[in-house]
Image (cartoon, rainbow, N blue to C red; front, side, top):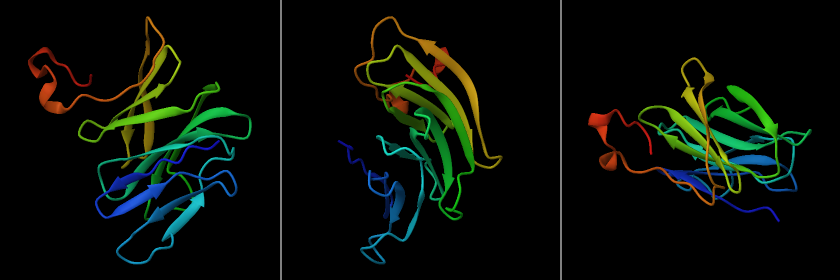
Length: 161
C-alpha cells in the first residue's frame, strides 16, 4: 500500500509518486486542478516522501531506486525534468522521512524502526547534498519531528533538536 503524503508550501502543493506511474507532481490550485508539472522522481514504486526547502523553487524527496536502495533527491521546480542533486544511501526496507530546517539548510533523514539518523547540508545554489553527521541512537526510532527554533538552547550552540 502506497501512503499518500502531500507537502504544501504557500499556494502550491507537491504530491509524491503513485505506484502506477511513479510521477512526482506539483499542483497550483490557483491556476488549474490538474498538475502544473510532473516528472519521474524515483525508479521504484515503493513509498516516497517530500519536504519543501523553505523557498518557492526547491524541494527534497526520498524514495527508492530500481535496486531498492534508498535515495535522496534535490529538485528545482523551475527546471523539473531532472534532479539537481541525487544521493544513494543504503538498502533498507523503511522509507526515510525528510525533516528540513530551511533556515540552516540542514536535512535530517529519519526512518521508522531504525537506529540511525542521517544529517545533510542542503545547498541549492551549488547544488549539493553534503553529509554532516550520522547519529546512532540507543533505541529504535518510532517517530521524529523538529523542535521549533524558539525552544532551542541557542546559547549552548544548539542548532537542531
